[in-house]
Amino acid sequence: MVPALPFRPGLPLVLARTRRHTPGVPKDPSTSAGRRAAWADSLLHDHSILRIGWRNWGAVEPGRLYRSNHPQPWQLAQAARRFGLRSVVNLRGQRVECGSDALSREAALRLGLAHYDAPFESRGAPHKDRILRLAELFGRIEEPVLIHCKSGADRTGLAAGLWLLLQGRPPEEAVAQLSLRWGHISASRTGILDAFFRLYAMACRSGASPKPFLDWLREDYDEAALRQSFTSRPWADRIVDGLLRRE
Image (cartoon, rainbow, N blue to C red; front, side, top):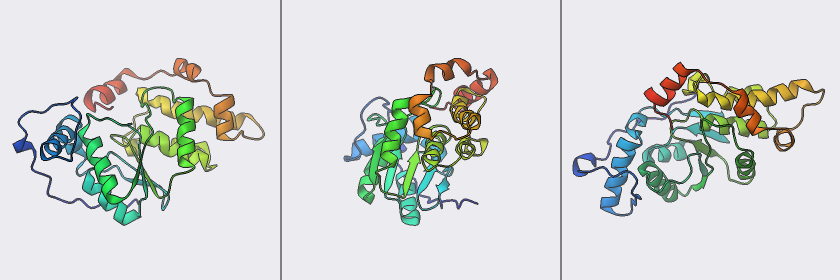
């Protein structure tokens, strides 16, 4: 069982002092007003209030790679102390208007953690160039590493699976990183990420000697064909896009 990170009470009391929420405005937590605006945006617009007690935390490989949803500053500090984190990879990409982004970057800097951006999509066929950039990043950053997106379900599962494939692990282990256990709903449009891993699994089974993942990616992977072949279920899309409002 994956150990749960402890919850620390004492949420900053910024909402009572922030009269107007202003999404879309760059957030600068280095000033008192900017910090209040960052917290208000994080809690209300980015829905981090729902992530206070729900971390979606897991160890892809203990001591090397961990996964979660977008961490609050104190959650990142707890994880750094407990697991010895050295690097953070943000799969949402840099968002200057996002309070969660501003606060976690500031926390990483304060904790001495290297912070990297590797943006991915959750509802489209994975882009070859982005996977290659992530592979290069994984090859040079200091471990242990924490990867996160917003909810820790879709893009984080994709990146965790890619990391396993880069370690030479079978595609079945990669696709297991995208499951309902993490909040991933494969029948929705985000299921195209599962389809990507299964496409490589089929390629591995079709030959006597499975092609290494990066060779298959460079030589055989067809993004357009994957997009054309995948169909989601409307009921699942309503859950992910309407009810959960996933990014």
